[in-house]
Length: 113
Image (cartoon, rainbow, N blue to C red):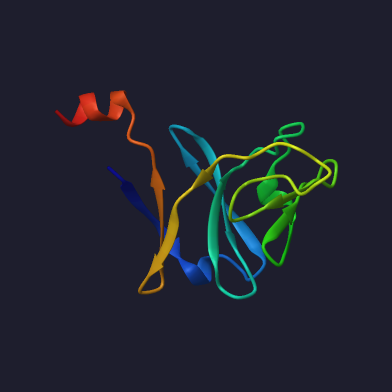
């Protein structure tokens, strides 16, 4: 079951930029590429936890501002020779609105019942 959350308009994020969304599961960095693709990653580099949302977007990667690790936006994987993975979240754009999907936790299910 997907829990889609509207986070704003695509125009709220500059091309090759990012926005941070604070969630109960932690901060999520939402990126927009120059081609208007949208990706969502946990806002922590797998290397030392740097804020990926403050990195530089180039193509379909973001460079961590702390130690220059490159992270693939579509998979969250570090680009070789580095190893590691930032968590990813499904993201989509519908009628100019950005949505991300967060996991439904047991606590969330319990509060709905």
